[in-house]
Length: 123
Image (cartoon, rainbow, N blue to C red):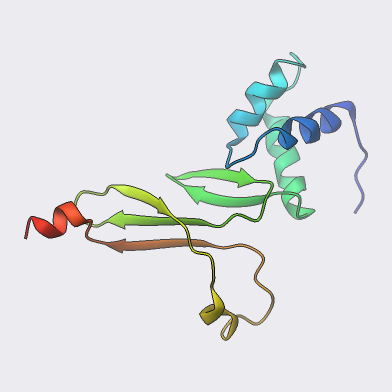
């Protein structure tokens, strides 16, 4: 389904190009609000939902909130089961998953739990 390209959608697409890392709907809203005082947060959420359907953004869950990226960066966390500290880490290859995924991997999110070095040393 092709949607019409409005002035606000053009503004949001342009502002999204300036966000080079992970961002939340609120981040895009703050940028867009500086140029269009009438734009609402609901418009931002509708735009991001549509952009995700069109594969223009990828969404990830981070700290119980949705974040987005215009690149296919992957999003990985290590969470300590004892102190609950969360750290981001990078994974470059997921070749082992290619054997079990019935399709092509374009991006991924991984959450790994365990004990951080500080809590592990406390045992």
